[in-house]
Amino acid sequence: MQVLNRPWGAMHYRIDGPQDGPAVVFANSLGTDLRLWDALLAQMPGIRAIRFDKRGHGLSDEGEEYSIADLAEDCAALIEATASGPVVLVGLSIGGMIAQALAAARPELLRALVLSNTAAKMGTAESWAERIEAVETRGIAAIADTIMERWFAPKFRATPELALWRNMVLRSSPTGYVAACRALAATDLTRTTATITRPTLVVAGDTDGSSPAELVEATARLIPGADFRIIPEAGHLPCVEQPEAYVRTIAPFLQEHAR
Ligand SMILES: O=C(O)CC1=CCC(=O)O1
Image 1 (cartoon, rainbow, N blue to C red):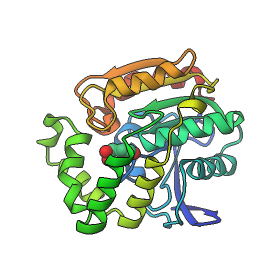
Image 2: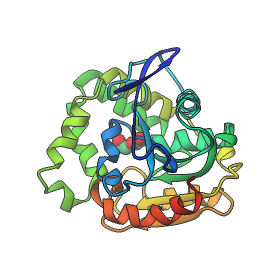
Image 3: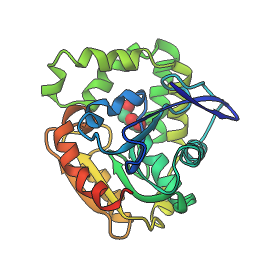
Image 4: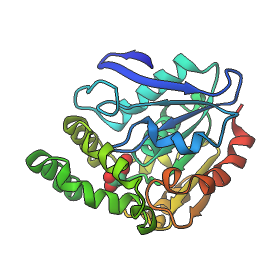
């Protein structure tokens, strides 16, 4: 286990793959930890994969109240501490918002971006307020089944693995989860995402209940030259549900841009 000391506490990260492999950083979604990428990375042994638990998730400390810009600074610090030059950043959902914010603020740290199941603005102030109220008054268990329906297509929801992802959400820190919901509610990256100049691949799932493909495509259209792909039979976490298709979708882009 590796730790990066940040002003708010300890940030957990992990590096897999050859030391001299092309560096690719992965940013997780709300309510998940860095195991989000396990199935994908099992099929990409050649890359130097750098992944981390954002504040209040996985093994990282909680931190105080924070913004997406603060999470992007954590990601910048990780890149500066672990990579010898610019990297390709793959961000999913809130991880994709972190990637958009970083690409606009610190483009020199990035060669290229994969924005997965994300948007410049996700949800509404009302929908996040409802979710926060449910977690604060009734606990994360109150939202776990709804979250599973948003994350996964029906076929995956019928597999035994579903229980493990449900447990990951149930065991999330309520404080960390709510802090991330507040950051999401407060963020609209539409203006800055339109200034992204790095090569960008945008990926959606055709049954994503959290960031529907049309919403993801609208964000792709903000970024000059961005490529947009849809993964069939995939919800919000296609790297879990359809890892082979996800690899087929992103591998050519990584081959072209990661060094
Ligand atoms: O929990 C969800 O609805 C999915 C999600 C929204 C932002 C994020 O990172 O995950």
